Image (tube, rainbow, N blue to C red; front, side, top):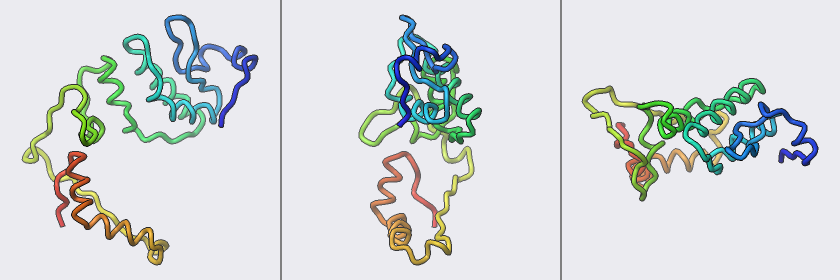
Amino acid sequence: MATLDTADRDRLRDRSFAWIDKQGERHLPINDEAHVRNAIARFDQTDFDEPGAKAEAARRILAAAKKHGIEVDPGDDATVVMVHSGQAELGFVALSQLRVPGRPARGSTWIVPAGLHAPIRQDAVLLAAGRDQPAAQALLAWLKSASARAEMRAWGYDEPVP
Protein backbone atom coordinates (compact mmCIF):
# COMPACT_ATOMS: atom_id res chain seq x y z
CA MET A 1 0.00 0.00 0.00
CA ALA A 2 1.29 3.44 -0.91
CA THR A 3 1.81 5.63 2.16
CA LEU A 4 2.75 9.25 2.73
CA ASP A 5 3.19 10.75 6.17
CA THR A 6 1.91 14.28 6.72
CA ALA A 7 5.33 15.90 6.38
CA ASP A 8 6.11 14.10 3.12
CA ARG A 9 2.66 14.91 1.73
CA ASP A 10 3.05 18.59 2.67
CA ARG A 11 6.39 18.73 0.81
CA LEU A 12 4.83 17.54 -2.46
CA ARG A 13 4.07 20.15 -5.09
CA ASP A 14 0.48 20.67 -6.23
CA ARG A 15 1.26 19.00 -9.55
CA SER A 16 1.89 15.77 -7.61
CA PHE A 17 -1.87 15.46 -7.04
CA ALA A 18 -4.57 14.56 -9.53
CA TRP A 19 -7.03 17.04 -8.11
CA ILE A 20 -7.20 20.04 -5.77
CA ASP A 21 -10.70 20.89 -4.52
CA LYS A 22 -12.25 24.36 -4.06
CA GLN A 23 -10.96 24.53 -0.48
CA GLY A 24 -7.40 23.83 -1.65
CA GLU A 25 -7.31 20.26 -0.32
CA ARG A 26 -5.15 18.03 -2.47
CA HIS A 27 -6.48 14.60 -3.50
CA LEU A 28 -5.14 11.48 -5.19
CA PRO A 29 -1.35 11.81 -4.99
CA ILE A 30 0.40 10.75 -8.20
CA ASN A 31 4.01 11.37 -7.18
CA ASP A 32 5.28 7.82 -7.75
CA GLU A 33 4.24 4.51 -9.29
CA ALA A 34 2.59 3.15 -6.14
CA HIS A 35 0.50 6.29 -5.65
CA VAL A 36 -0.51 6.39 -9.31
CA ARG A 37 -1.76 2.81 -9.03
CA ASN A 38 -3.62 3.77 -5.87
CA ALA A 39 -5.15 6.84 -7.58
CA ILE A 40 -6.37 4.64 -10.43
CA ALA A 41 -7.93 2.22 -7.95
CA ARG A 42 -9.60 4.98 -5.90
CA PHE A 43 -10.64 7.23 -8.79
CA ASP A 44 -14.29 6.14 -8.88
CA GLN A 45 -14.54 6.46 -5.07
CA THR A 46 -13.62 10.16 -5.15
CA ASP A 47 -16.30 12.86 -5.03
CA PHE A 48 -15.41 15.79 -7.27
CA ASP A 49 -16.93 19.16 -6.34
CA GLU A 50 -16.85 21.08 -9.60
CA PRO A 51 -17.62 20.48 -13.29
CA GLY A 52 -14.66 19.21 -15.22
CA ALA A 53 -12.67 18.22 -12.13
CA LYS A 54 -13.14 14.50 -12.71
CA ALA A 55 -12.05 14.75 -16.34
CA GLU A 56 -9.01 16.84 -15.41
CA ALA A 57 -8.07 14.38 -12.66
CA ALA A 58 -8.45 11.50 -15.13
CA ARG A 59 -6.11 13.26 -17.59
CA ARG A 60 -3.54 13.89 -14.86
CA ILE A 61 -3.69 10.28 -13.62
CA LEU A 62 -3.34 8.90 -17.16
CA ALA A 63 -0.35 11.18 -17.81
CA ALA A 64 1.27 10.07 -14.54
CA ALA A 65 0.58 6.43 -15.42
CA LYS A 66 2.32 6.89 -18.76
CA LYS A 67 5.28 8.62 -17.07
CA HIS A 68 5.67 5.70 -14.64
CA GLY A 69 5.22 3.01 -17.31
CA ILE A 70 1.85 1.84 -16.02
CA GLU A 71 -0.38 0.46 -18.75
CA VAL A 72 -3.96 1.64 -18.45
CA ASP A 73 -6.68 0.26 -20.66
CA PRO A 74 -7.67 3.21 -22.85
CA GLY A 75 -11.28 2.17 -22.38
CA ASP A 76 -11.07 2.54 -18.60
CA ASP A 77 -13.88 5.04 -18.33
CA ALA A 78 -11.86 7.86 -19.97
CA THR A 79 -14.57 8.49 -22.58
CA VAL A 80 -17.35 8.04 -20.05
CA VAL A 81 -15.61 10.48 -17.68
CA MET A 82 -15.22 13.05 -20.44
CA VAL A 83 -18.90 12.84 -21.44
CA HIS A 84 -20.30 12.83 -17.90
CA SER A 85 -18.11 15.77 -16.88
CA GLY A 86 -19.25 17.85 -19.82
CA GLN A 87 -15.78 17.96 -21.37
CA ALA A 88 -17.15 16.14 -24.42
CA GLU A 89 -20.66 16.39 -25.83
CA LEU A 90 -20.69 12.85 -27.16
CA GLY A 91 -18.81 9.62 -26.63
CA PHE A 92 -18.91 6.24 -28.33
CA VAL A 93 -18.54 3.50 -25.72
CA ALA A 94 -19.66 -0.06 -25.10
CA LEU A 95 -23.11 -0.30 -23.56
CA SER A 96 -21.61 -2.39 -20.76
CA GLN A 97 -19.68 0.71 -19.62
CA LEU A 98 -22.94 2.55 -19.03
CA ARG A 99 -25.28 -0.17 -17.85
CA VAL A 100 -25.11 -2.48 -14.88
CA PRO A 101 -27.66 -5.31 -14.96
CA GLY A 102 -30.66 -4.40 -12.83
CA ARG A 103 -29.93 -0.65 -12.92
CA PRO A 104 -30.87 1.94 -15.55
CA ALA A 105 -28.15 3.18 -17.90
CA ARG A 106 -26.56 6.51 -16.94
CA GLY A 107 -27.24 9.46 -19.20
CA SER A 108 -28.80 9.16 -22.61
CA THR A 109 -27.86 6.33 -24.90
CA TRP A 110 -28.31 5.34 -28.50
CA ILE A 111 -27.76 1.71 -29.29
CA VAL A 112 -26.31 1.43 -32.78
CA PRO A 113 -28.65 -0.81 -34.80
CA ALA A 114 -27.07 -4.14 -35.70
CA GLY A 115 -27.70 -3.45 -39.39
CA LEU A 116 -25.30 -0.48 -39.29
CA HIS A 117 -22.21 -2.48 -38.35
CA ALA A 118 -20.66 -5.86 -38.80
CA PRO A 119 -21.12 -8.21 -35.83
CA ILE A 120 -18.45 -7.80 -33.20
CA ARG A 121 -16.94 -11.20 -32.65
CA GLN A 122 -15.03 -12.11 -29.50
CA ASP A 123 -13.32 -15.46 -29.38
CA ALA A 124 -12.09 -17.57 -26.51
CA VAL A 125 -9.21 -19.96 -26.93
CA LEU A 126 -7.53 -22.47 -24.69
CA LEU A 127 -3.76 -22.12 -24.90
CA ALA A 128 -1.50 -25.15 -24.68
CA ALA A 129 -0.24 -24.01 -21.26
CA GLY A 130 -3.81 -24.13 -19.91
CA ARG A 131 -4.87 -27.36 -21.58
CA ASP A 132 -4.64 -29.37 -18.34
CA GLN A 133 -5.90 -26.61 -16.04
CA PRO A 134 -9.36 -27.37 -14.59
CA ALA A 135 -10.16 -23.68 -14.13
CA ALA A 136 -9.44 -22.93 -17.80
CA GLN A 137 -11.56 -25.87 -18.93
CA ALA A 138 -14.39 -24.81 -16.58
CA LEU A 139 -14.31 -21.25 -17.95
CA LEU A 140 -14.61 -22.47 -21.54
CA ALA A 141 -17.44 -24.81 -20.57
CA TRP A 142 -19.26 -21.96 -18.80
CA LEU A 143 -18.84 -19.63 -21.80
CA LYS A 144 -20.84 -22.17 -23.84
CA SER A 145 -23.63 -22.39 -21.25
CA ALA A 146 -27.09 -20.83 -21.13
CA SER A 147 -26.14 -18.92 -17.97
CA ALA A 148 -23.18 -17.32 -19.76
CA ARG A 149 -25.43 -16.28 -22.66
CA ALA A 150 -27.91 -14.80 -20.19
CA GLU A 151 -25.10 -12.88 -18.45
CA MET A 152 -23.87 -11.52 -21.78
CA ARG A 153 -27.41 -10.39 -22.70
CA ALA A 154 -27.77 -8.73 -19.28
CA TRP A 155 -24.67 -6.65 -20.02
CA GLY A 156 -26.03 -5.59 -23.42
CA TYR A 157 -24.36 -8.07 -25.75
CA ASP A 158 -26.15 -10.08 -28.43
CA GLU A 159 -26.13 -13.86 -28.51
CA PRO A 160 -22.76 -15.21 -29.60
CA VAL A 161 -22.69 -16.56 -33.13
CA PRO A 162 -21.29 -20.11 -33.25
